[in-house]
Length: 303
Image (cartoon, rainbow, N blue to C red; front, side, top):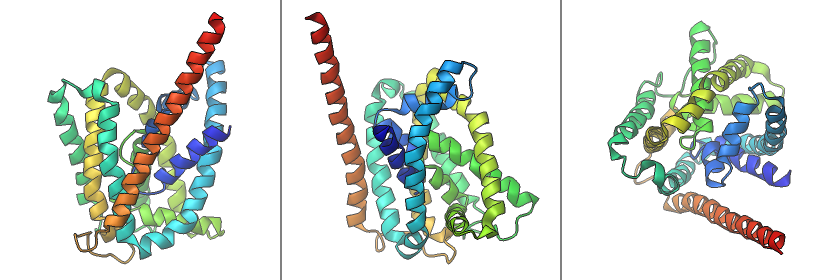
């Protein structure tokens, strides 16, 4: 229970910021397959698998909710006041996560370099969304109309799809749609019983639900049957998200200049990279302990 709750907590911290996705954290910590299969089984017809998936996701969910509430309580202010430091942190996350992804998936992509075109497609998707972001200073959600609702629902579908992939963060998708700050602010205000953003959050929730039911199985099938192409596309989206983060300051309520060498923080960049490195080291230690336990059990059974 505690281990899965901690896993969920780490996923929430990743999901709450435009950087490494919760799916990446699940991938780095070695439980991604269990996570994606549980999401799929919860919607399946096998009652035994559904029950097992339910309890697994509940344990993750407890940690995720705690992590998200803690993150949201501070992000709205921190993101506004320290945007360049936070963005530098996100860059550190992603730039180190890319080679980690390549090393973990080397069997899927080695010798299949012709699929690099999918990486280009991944880059184009993220950069394209960034370029068509309405108004360039964040989407206007102060007055919800049918067009805005459709826009937010679509963003929610894309965000949840990205969130479960081991690559680009769902929050990065919200950032590129110009919805990151409105959503973070909306959640914070809702927790204070201010329902001004209720329409926005409902529309986003509908998009997330639709995204889970429509895209989750497609993602699972893509990873099973077209893993090489999918991994290349994810890597491309991670590379493209670097551009989204650099121009992230332009999406604030009070737009600021895109990140430059002058506003880039090497200290926070190193911290971001160190976090991903630390997660990878922790995973390696955990895997070795699990292997040692398995070997010990086999030896005991022989004797």
